[in-house]
Length: 270
Image (cartoon, rainbow, N blue to C red):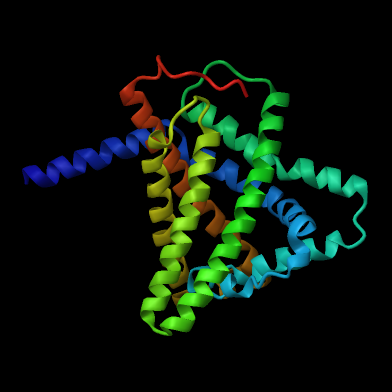
């Protein structure tokens, strides 16, 4: 009984700490801005790397994306269509829209880390713009690596081991992406060791949640409830779940920094 009570109290305190950081509210906010930014982001990704004709079907065909692959394919097709004869005004407005998520990620980080000195919005926009191109280059490289290694492994094994290896590669690439986002979110100049555990937790939680969500969709009948907008509702739920996982990881990093003490940690200039 003592062990059970200890586990219960630990879980209760953890949930109370997460709630004190408004993790569900922040996750909902970031999910909203991700929805607003995703098509402009894919637009610029296509504008820069679209001529390379990468086979995204190998990624979307994974069972972890079963519930939202149609929406992702639609976003990709819409962005590719928009790049044909795109005007300068469209390019600039989509570039600004693409930075929105990263801008609000940083603002959310200031809330989570209880950062009192509010930074200039212009400086944070510049920071978000730089991160945008870093993330685009990283995603392009990761897609190339995943397609190469995934195809190589499938040709070698053709078994369940190949599927496991493919998901391990996907998790490793996702971890690198989340690690960079955690460095951006934190308003302090931290080292990789300060964000590695939260990033790892985000990837683990996101993977389990995505598989669980796909299983739930295969067993449920959401079409009867939502009808024609089922795909949209499913995508929104999936994004919200992933953002809860991401914010939870950020809070874990924040807790670790609080235990070490933030007094000796330098503040970012932007």
